[in-house]
Image (cartoon, rainbow, N blue to C red):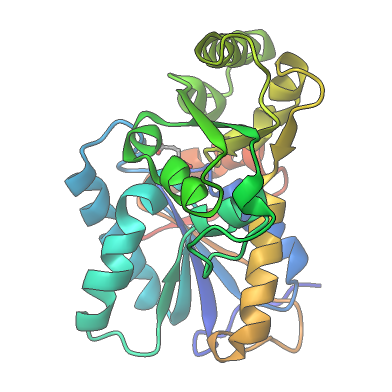
Length: 293
Ligand code: DGL
């Protein structure tokens, strides 16, 4: 039985532009059943994927602040777009002068790059054996994630001989969110994979990063259309593994509850509509509540 969260507990917040982060959030709630989690989806402003960078930074900062005000000591950006565009600015430039002491912000690019390169995030120069890695890595993501070049830059720091090929998947996140039929989703995935293979001259990637938190819902379609030996990185699992490691090293960010707490789901949008759509991402998920500040 899960119990309601007590407001004074140290919570972990997960922020996303909308529903996609639920794929990560669900994996975290399952991995850490005694940790109190809050999810905030900025459904009023979703999607972020095509917005200008300064808007993404500002919206993400508002979301992070809303979670910090709600007893979160740690906020994870469960969104590739927000992480690629805003994480560094918020971590380095905003948080230290924001007045929020003893808090931290994490993103989901770092654990994904660690998994793709088999190299810890703290290691930013090529080390043996990864400096000789010549794999081809594919990154699928939103327009803004791809334009940020965050994945290729971070991968190449650790694996300079790896070739990183990026591919946007126009309309895919929106189609997933609107509950589009399987055939429509498959056509969008097939189009993205075909465009990627056109870039590589038909050479199949060794690994593929599904760099948008919506895409785990169509992972089976990527598997179907990518060549069979391409290894897909599953972000929800990768992020859960990484958070487990982080919390072992930083126990100050969490106070585990005696009984399993109910995860809290918040939205800037219409809670009824958002709760209905959330069933696509997390069947049986708790209902969302609206926040205005
Ligand atoms: N959740 C976002 C991501 O992971 C995608 C949705 C959006 O464009 O807002 O990139």
